[in-house]
Length: 215
Ligand SMILES: C[S@@+](CC[C@H](N)C(=O)[O-])C[C@H]1O[C@@H](n2cnc3c(N)ncnc32)[C@H](O)[C@@H]1O
Image 1 (tube, rainbow, N blue to C red):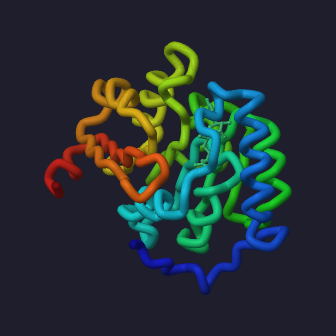
Image 2: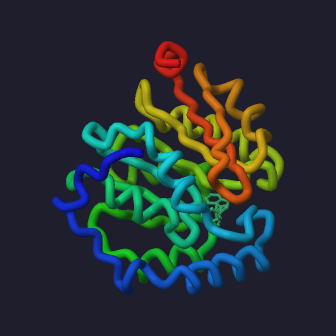
């Protein structure tokens, strides 16, 4: 498991203890799933084991811009902030205004920019934050239930938004996204994380051959 190098140096302010009770987060998440099943794609938030597995390869010391797609109730947002360098920025993009309002109300951290919109517009959000490219993008988007063409466009935009050697980190319950990643990313790795219910695919995609060489 990755260490938490910056946890003691930078305090993330959760406006309520632990960012709201698990029960409250699960209730809000489940309600949104009932309202927008295709957009949310899952009935429960990701487990802490899955969060640790997805974030394990990140080089936190060198990361200055991290982007998160589909933060929901912040299951990944909080652990990213716990690990992130004091001078780094996290842009969290969600299409669901209720989740955006929830995150804004729950997390008080100057390194976090929560934006309402689609991941398709990632490059515009990066420019508006004063950056050129991201070191990492992590995605919780339900690619198999997104409207036609949206998933492919998001993968292409993400490839353009990443710095050379930057990585697209994805967790998914199906392998559907692989057909969208293959045409745009040079190196892709895929494994199953069994310690999540249900077991979940953990995918890394990068634009150069760094992953292939390391494997
Ligand atoms: C399965 S939930 C993931 C929530 C959380 N990251 C987790 O792991 O528990 C999917 C999230 O993607 C968001 N979403 C769906 N389509 C999107 C899009 N085009 N751009 C940004 N967010 C989107 C939904 O609103 C929802 O918050």
